[in-house]
Image 1 (cartoon, helix red, strand yellow):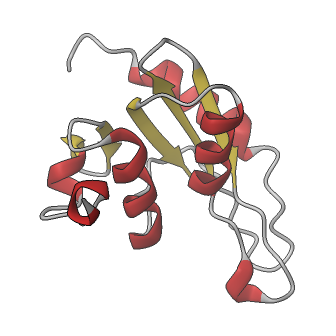
Image 2 (cartoon, helix red, strand yellow):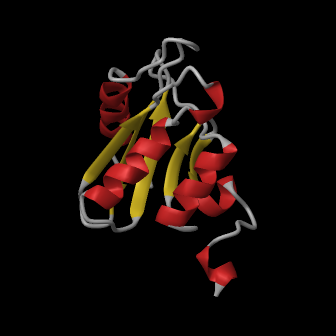
Length: 129
């Protein structure tokens, strides 16, 4: 974990955050992740006048993951306007678990954690088998 360049991933998340559409909350978020084949995927939040249908940055990131060939997320971070690391919301933790599994590494507000630490006892595809 210590060898991974989290600063570069944070820089990519910050660049994505610059494209956020946040006319209501004024709280831009950017997310960046690496895929198991080496690709980088990013996302930003996109708000809507119907507040409940806003898209978190992680939603765009997961969509880009599948548009560009799928795979498994291996490393993830999301940042706010000040480039501070922030935690994914509950819905997004579920999205990340689905697309990265329990071994996905996240840079969190309290350091690097595995997805199964961030979302313990997660419900996932294996539960539907």
